[in-house]
Image (tube, helix red, strand yellow):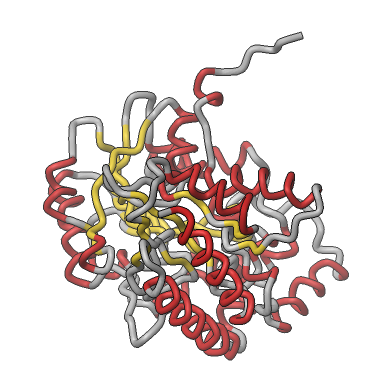
Length: 398
């Protein structure tokens, strides 16, 4: 029987995982692949810090396996609020924090709260495809504003201002940026906040990579730059704290009254799904307030892998790459090839050379350009092998 599906659900695509499906098919055929497609540090030499494991284990064996309060356990929310204040985000208490099942659930709940069908958020291009997927489920949309590749992937705030319409309900800033590895500077972030304030709309600030910074790059929390513009800040344990499988994320609601319709609606949606998994929530305080040595070790490894990626990719004829400043991604540009479709380029690279990356069109890109995203998490010897294969592929693709 052919069961009909909803029109909105049928439109949903998710480039990162869609490519992984084809890769798994090739693996079943006996192919050995190098995965540069998913930002999962847990699959490489980035172990979750021991004190976080101990905290989670203590919760598990201490029988803290019950349903938590829908917004999260108190000690975790209080620790997140203290961490936010240390970063310069003023007037944040535990009542301004909700814990979600990873940032992904936070995105889903917040966009459901803000958007009606036919409305939109403004998002950078390129951006993380989850936002588009969730908007499509709602019957809403993501309207683009460009990041300037020739300026280290900085947001084009002039174009951002021109892109606001009567249906715009929020501005999304992904900083540090996935998929480019770019970091918006203080002046640019302030301009985004000011534009949002002028139009009476909130900023959604995805800051999940805010401590994975290279070459002296600084990150400025969006909410630290305003005392009146509403800002929703996403963060969690997945990236900085190397625990992606725990699905522990959160939203900080700045300049938003806990009793407001918006905050109340977020809480109602949280109630409807019961709670985020309880035991990992007991590791949040340990993560934020315990030893932080893993961060320096992680950054040192990733900075070297970013350098290798930047140098090797720019040495390949037909590829150019802006130097990553944060996170563990690069968004190289493809030129001088016979290909007119970047997804086919990615599929052929995977089929012929066994290197798995993600097509740039899955994240959005400027018209007339082709890119791909690299997650440079593997050890250096694996990266070199992958880039050797990529160079060989480009010799036949031109």
